[in-house]
Length: 208
Image (cartoon, rainbow, N blue to C red; front, side, top):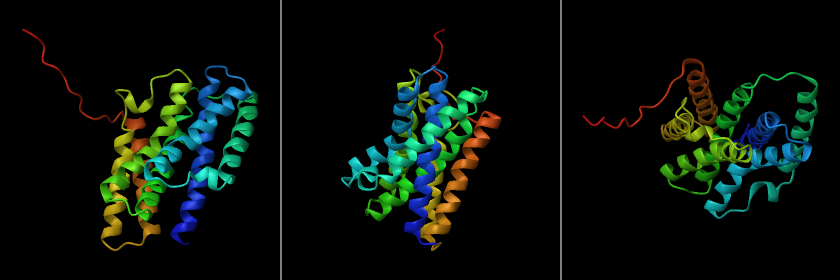
């Protein structure tokens, strides 16, 4: 599989997974179908949109409306399935981790192909992976996961993006490096959820 084909299909899967998380999260707020669709589309397309605007490239879902169709289709199916089945409140964390991994690597590779420097490309990967979730949480009137004093999130994405870039620099094929990067992001995020892995915080000394 070529790197272009990988990015297309992984990007499509990321859109679908993030749309699913948007609907599941909106369900906690008892939104109607239109509200859930808006949250799903923002979650699925928001990160890549910000990336493309920052890179001054055509926005991906405007160029290929199949991404928009995938987001809407997944959202509608998820909405009616979730209405018929009881969904655990934290279930969306698993597909959210998958979406973070997929979008992070797609965003990093897109930036590299756009000839962005390696550090910029890694941050574009984090933006692609995390901004959709930020929009989802804001629209659902929640504090975004990325800003909570909780498990690794953006740091897991950044670690995977940097690892993928490093692997490519050692001569590993972009396709194989991309899969490895996705595995690192997903593994770190799932481990963080399971074992409550967090970054150190700035603890202010108490006044004596």
